[in-house]
Image 1 (cartoon, one colour):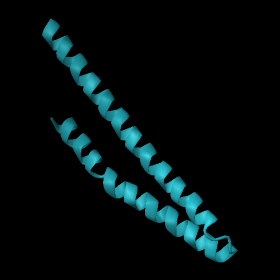
Image 2: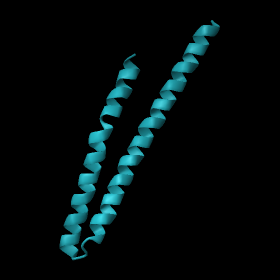
Image 3: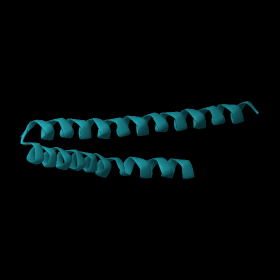
Image 4: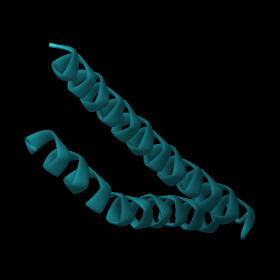
Length: 82
């Protein structure tokens, strides 16, 4: 049960993490565009990088949840056999 709660907390943190990665990417891109005079290209590139980082973290969280569920199912099967 504690493992389940830990996974739920991790899922709850994915939304703010996605927003944070977008904001950080956007701010870096905006600053570099302003500094280098390349507007809006670096802003667009860094927003895309922020989105990619956010989706990658969502994918990692889903994979870890899938693994945890598979381990729980394996334990249940093992307990059922005993």
